[in-house]
Amino acid sequence: MLITICIGSSCHLKGSRSVIQGLEKKIRENNLASKIELNGSFCTGECEKGVCVKIDEELFSVSPETVDKFFEEEVLRRVH
Image (cartoon, rainbow, N blue to C red; front, side):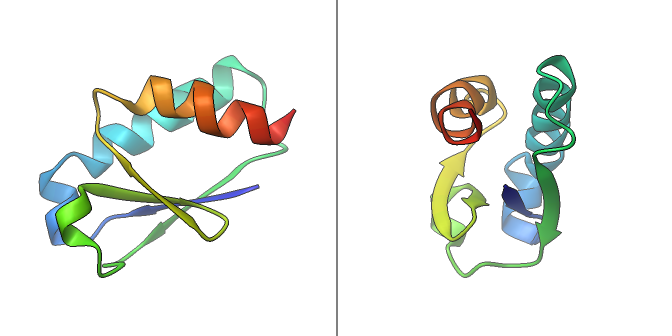
């Protein structure tokens, strides 16, 4: 599974670094490093949606506060 996090200016200001760190932590805790690839991208053109995160081609708005919920509800259900 490919997860792409926008690291463009707007998403950076909204916490993309914290989102990346949160996802890395959850991937480690769940031993999913062999199943999930994290990737960064510059602007996805959806700046108003916050930190833009894509699973494959599906776009999500994630914040540092919602990264755990996003992982549990969207990532885990797709990977198992």
